[in-house]
Length: 395
Image (cartoon, rainbow, N blue to C red; front, side, top):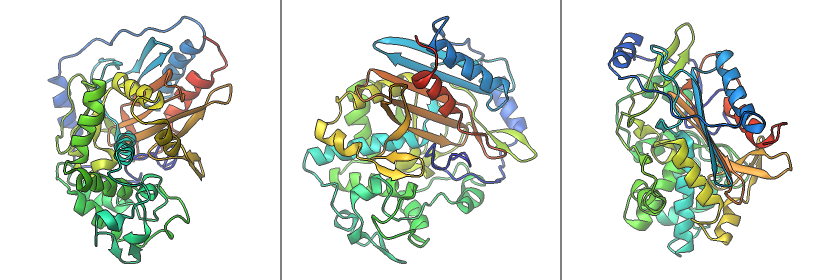
């Protein structure tokens, strides 16, 4: 689920690589022809200024053929701007609709980290608890010792635990068997079969294994799955009607765009349907731009966590691409230097990014209906977010 160039910048769930897929384009076209066309949602933007720059940036990305389609929504001081550019399907004239559902990939991590911080507030665990305390014997052997790895280090990727979504995993398992169900135990084992990347706390490396472990810890602490906790603590509380933890469900709720990957010599390949269980707590959720904006506005605005917990969440580790906190990172800066915090995510077929200012009053979510594996361009979301938060024009 990662753009090759954006392995760190977009924090997606899979590693990029030259991969093969057994989903034929003919089947994708058949599915598309049976799907009723929809009209694009209402797209409201100012005729001049920063918001028109967002639309222009999106149009340019489509014209450069970097993506089939893009959607975005901005909320600032109670005003909403919604955007769409390009095609929802390469087989029809359906347009991108800002109300589409999409897979959010690693943005799931922000939800998981929020639940973990809530549990810490409730004194049900400490972020400095060892993994061994909650999962005895799970992270042991092959150079690993869970007694020296903390929950905090899982959440900020300083654990040294290897990433299970290796290129080999993508080639051998995910692409060849897109509908297979994977358990958390399987995914953790795949990560631990690789040697540690460094001693705990002595480095930084993005690893989806960290968040699968975090999800298992949440279940051990609460007696409920990470998904059930997200649903009760965040989705229900905020009324996120279009957000779900997909689990093993391979389809997307309507309406949605078709999702594509690019393969060397084959162009766009439809991979809208797949079993996202291999993403687990690292990236299996589905949402919309509207719901994600509600979530990030509430999170950054202090409605889900205490001030003390937010301070811990934003206590970033310096990485090659900037500060990474607990399931959240500094995606860009505003023209005045204020940080914009959020997360990116990618899973086969979709690439996304959400974030906002620390008061929660200015948030943005964007999605493209492709994940690039061949000839990947720079992260398109970076351009869109810069246009909104650091554009030369003023609203």
